[in-house]
Length: 335
Image (cartoon, rainbow, N blue to C red; front, side, top):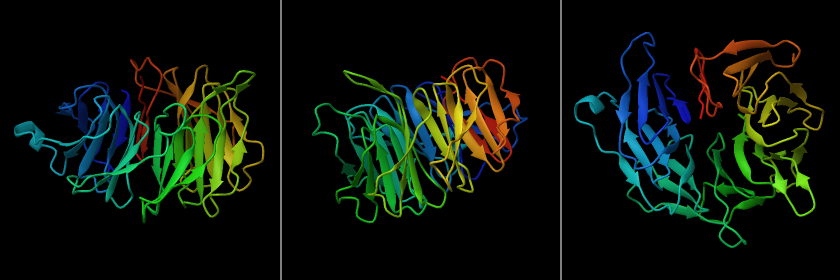
């Protein structure tokens, strides 16, 4: 699976490994009922997300479109499948998408160097196009998107992070400088911090190793705290639900836990994996990190010396890409 997501109500799991999206009813996981298949994209689905009310599933694809599937009654797809709303306008692949916390906006980011804001549910209105990367020497894709918990800000990640004021998204964004192409973004649950992670930078004279940056949203124009220590790309990051910890995962086969109360302090380094870590996710009291070894390490936060290994489903043989965790569920995605 390239991408996976649970619906906010916990009833459905969506995933894709091709140009179709599948919906599994997880209210009865022991059932052998096959998934509902949502067909329509003409190329691989790269990203997907549920709306906050669980009534819509958005999918983004290499066919340059996003699609909105009305799943308020998903079983209609077994009888008379309704057609999705097709969102056109991007000129290249859709790399990322996200719903605002109130469900009024769908943001899409593309390899065409733009993000677009689609009004929900009136998607026939022309989207707001967020630009900013076209005037540099080379185009940079929008690889990451994140809404702040209060919905007032949208962060986009490319060669820099940009903060767009959702109260007036047509205004110029706040530009947050960062070394490297940003692959991952996350707001802390209280909205006080924005974290970004990036890959390595090759210059004429040196190699700059990927870093994470941490901006204080109470003064976002101030210099960020730069979190250094990884020896390779930072592929993914996640805040704990209480906002006290930031986890970063890297191609250097380690995860690191950073104490948000003192982010300049040395992190807890979680070792043991033999391949790149692409899926950290923090649960209350536990840190989980997955990689290409078909297993996840589960570590009590703050106790890096105590590690348990949870083996994933046999047959998951490739690098984990997008896991998602619910209170009762743990799933791992791969490539």
